[in-house]
Image (tube, rainbow, N blue to C red; front, side, top):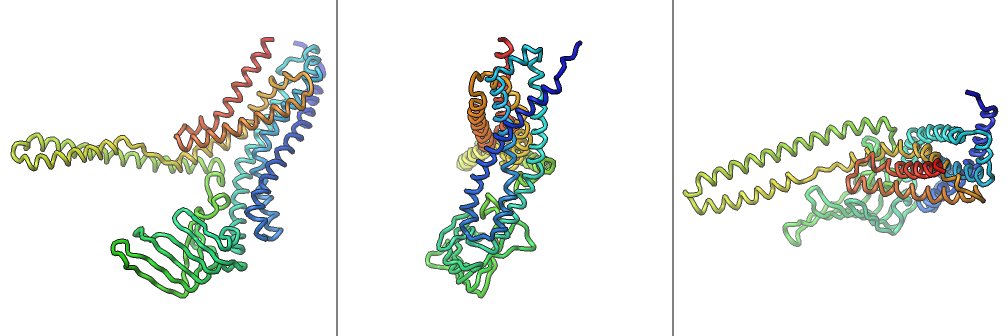
Length: 429
């Protein structure tokens, strides 16, 4: 088999065109996501007079999350722009007339897609969790020195199990703070303090402490009207879970973990989930046995005491209702489902670099003029569709318990099917 000369030069020529288009597309998405992140930080951080150095670190630690999406979308739009330029300038026709097969034109792009997949995976699996952890640590550091970031002056903040009302804030001091929550007995409690400040809990992870000074506590008696208990103290330490504060920055989860660590956590959670299922099954079997004994009692002793029989019959009906409810109840561990979704997302998003190149090859050949512009427009539409499908898959995976693999890989599957359809059409021409 004769080797067509100049193949190496052709490969470099195709890669050079792809690289130029990729850089343009990558910078577009990077700037778009970066500006969006700056707008988020402007609301959360910049407007609170945070030191410039802390703001700069915040931006740096946000970069991995921006790069994690810019790389795949850059590969999509870059390959579409490159193939569109080749098609509109009739260079594909020139390649084919010179004896260059279609797959040889695809191979350099596919190699670039594989390389971007590896880079994107490292970004998602190592730098993104590291950046999120640094973001959380930085946010906590800023929060302790500038509580106005989370607790704005003269505002009412509603959290999961409590409400915090604040007065004026001077540096780290919060004036006239009121906390409304519930006691362990589910009784409403009101805590009022002349001032308070945020402190880091050194002994307990995931806890932020509010030191309250000149405290008055009021707890009404839920059983007796107009009766209540109150206490006063010079100071009080009130602990709050970090996840109940600004979850967008300080709620650790699978995004802050590497894929291997997420997988190990899934194994532990899955064992606990199976144990709970077995426990539920044992309780259901015990309830079924009790029902059988009750039914046998009614059958054997129904004629001896009609009054007792009616009472037992009603108890049996109630017990049967409880049994069917427990039997048919679906036990769901949403935290385990979330970990599984994030695990597959760590692979599906980087792998989209390869799928996008496969999609761009036949679609880009459709361009007849303005190849780069057409490729850029199609790329934006496909990137929006992919992101939309990814969000839908994640939402349905949590709410409807869709299989995590299907939910996170479905966007890639859709793009791959469309790519195969266009490739089949091009091949049959």
